[in-house]
Image (cartoon, rainbow, N blue to C red):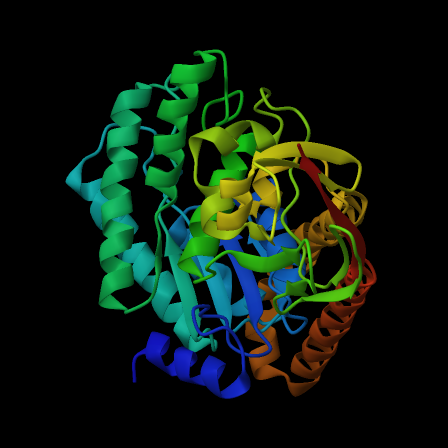
Length: 416
């Protein structure tokens, strides 16, 4: 049976959202090279999965490794993934596999061979659902290698096509990281100039702006439709809210809610590539993945002022009747402090994961042969892996301390 239909049936049977390919009790491995080891797009993915979906059954671990190619992960995956036992994975290889040269058939052949090993290896260790990602792109204004940025983007586009082909062959989702990044790069450069660098100072290790694009591609591939919630505020009657948001009170044009599904919150600076907010005008993150919609009925004026937390904005009655996306319209939200605290905890956990995998778990391969021959060594190795897994579970538990309902109030005032 194909993976996607099976998971859809599971989600329907358990009441989970059918569009997501994440099964119940999902254990998600975020896998890739140094771009993954930057622990930025992985942090965005994990924060989204824990805060924005309303699900408490998801666990995440990142497996980034600087300088790695697909073949390198294929060699370590059975050993390294054993400490986490994922049933879901995202992969992002290709930047190093392109060898920083113009494309040639042998480059593509080697990448395809090794990605096939990765996919088959992940299936072997129990990964049931996966999003195969393309490599990202490079910024020609910052990329300084022995190949032009244009030529290397052509190389990476070939590898994108190979990744897409492999995803289709294996009937799993494809995360089009390359086109998501290049499309936003082109638009943002046209608006902000060549000095704007969302792909980082070297042109290929993305700044937070570029990392948000990567997270966007993977979250879409994982099947999330972006519906954070809908609040219907009735100026003359009872207000209502969708699942994940409970109306706690309110009158005379206001509603107080308790929300267990949070909108994704962005950094402050609208122009710096070091802020993920700066890329929002040039991509569809909010439209695709971050819709917390306010609809107002029985409004007796052509315009109204909406106050959410400490910030106010004016909208027309037509806009409010159709629905405005609070997550996109407000630069300050009642979720900011809680979101920052959760993100900081995830940052600390993912830093531990790099130490866990690179300094400890990977080195266990050096005693694998001895363990295969000596039951005592094998038992000791299994015990160590369990202890490391237990420590990772403690780190995860610490993260979850920061996930809690957020109480907030929306007030709508008619402008006569």
